[in-house]
Length: 368
Ligand SMILES: NC(=O)c1ccc[n+]([C@@H]2O[C@H](COP(=O)([O-])OP(=O)(O)OC[C@H]3O[C@@H](n4cnc5c(N)ncnc54)[C@H](OP(=O)(O)O)[C@@H]3O)[C@@H](O)[C@H]2O)c1
Image (cartoon, rainbow, N blue to C red; front, side):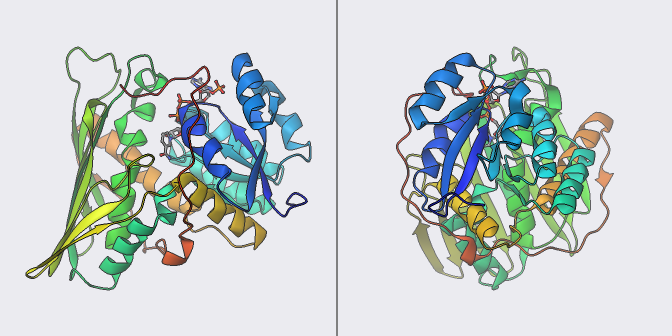
């Protein structure tokens, strides 16, 4: 039930840094999506942030009223990870479509509950894997699948940032730590490039002295995939920002950086080495949040299941929780073998100019 202009109407749940810094400005770039409501626990945001975008504001306690109001077709859920379930399930049960930030949940039970709720009501659930609609990423995935680099065998990646001790990420243990927050990027990329699911996980982590975090602040994960393929990645909350991956195939190599980020100055770029040939591929900066939102709205308008659906989110979460088991036990963890599922395709690309981001209201960036 789009609005009079045929646009999908979104309610934003959680007015934090990703909502203010990316989703809320980005939606205005699309031609099929619009915001109508904000759900927030902060009276200043309820007044000023909602006012800035002309939204009706609701408190978390009044969420059910919003879901029943007829004012929205979908919600964008961008609360801390441990609060995803409580906003996703009632929305799906009310037949409201859900665009949910990654990681889908902090455990696989919550993922399954969301998948079931979407199935039962028919409302669509998409995990906000913005790179699944980004042109440079999809070019790499397609080229690897087409065999340009031979058999993909080895994936390595580093993704780091310095998180402020004041951010909630510092207080909620593994569920809010670097593995669940940043791990989905290299993990999801490796799964897509290999077009396969890992069968074994091992991890080692450190708690750097002097950090306030109550979990491992830096973690290295090793994944074994079928057919003797390996992926390793390191994520950190206590190192300067850095992002890269390398994919080695039997005929060539991709070195990608930036490859996970978004925003001003971040155009996804990679260097392709095949034999003696080395080429740089730099993609334009696009509004990745506008892209994923436009794609999801198209799925709703055309009654098509989004590709990064609950199943895709669950496949990452089952690995993330195995990482925690490995960190705690010091033992490798076996995963049930799964067939690959269709990876992101080029027709998911939605390309929009980057929106201007207004100054944050009553929230701060989580990183230093
Ligand atoms: N796709 C991406 O690139 C990307 C990037 C960063 C984060 N994320 C994901 O987006 C989600 C939100 O991350 P964020 O960086 O925006 O976090 P954030 O800046 O801390 O914002 C989270 C917001 O959630 C609301 N909230 C509700 N209950 C809360 C609680 N108990 N503690 C703290 N905040 C609470 C608050 O909004 P109100 O004040 O309005 O109530 C808060 O501002 C996470 O799932 C994260 O993994 C995705």
